[in-house]
Image 1 (cartoon, rainbow, N blue to C red):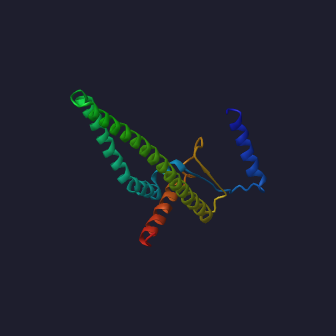
Image 2 (spheres, rainbow, N blue to C red):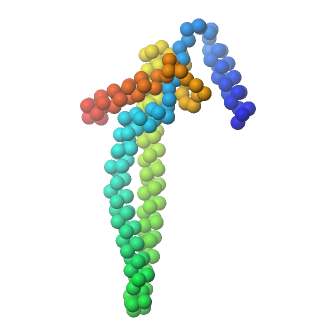
Image 3 (cartoon, rainbow, N blue to C red):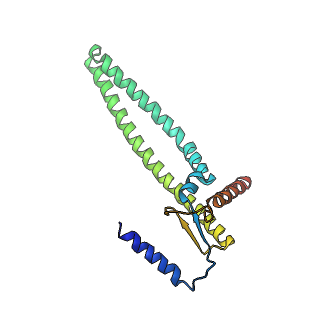
Length: 177
C-alpha cells in the first residue's frame, strides 16, 4: 500500500498536467464526502424512510421473540409438572417458533440491507451531482474528495455543497417529491 500511494499521486499529477497547459489560475476545491453523506438532508430523509418502512416488521419480530422467550421459560419452569404429551407439544411449539423467528430475522436483515443499498446508491448520485453542479457553476477545474492529507478552508466547499443539497431537498419537499 505504501508503494501504491506515491504511484497514484504521480499518475494523478501527470493526468492533471497532461490535460492541457498548466494555468497559474487553476481552481481546485475539496469536499468532505463523509460529512456530506452524514449530514445531507437526503441522507437523513432516507434513514427516516427506512425506519418507517421497517419499524412495523421489526416490532412484530420483537413481539415474537418475547413470546418465544416466554414459552421457553414456561417449558423450563413447568415441564416437570406437565404430562409427557403436554411437554412434547410445548417443545414442538417452541422449536417451530424459534425456526420462524430465525427465518424472519434473516429475511428482515436481507431486505433491509437491499433497501439500504438502494438508498445509498440514490443518495450518492444526488450528492455527486450536487458537487458537480456546484463545481461547474463556480468554475472549478478539479474537486478532490476525502480522504486527503490536508485541505485549507479556502478550498473546502463542503458547506456550500451541503447548502445546495439542503436547498434541493427543501424544493423537492415543497414540490411534493
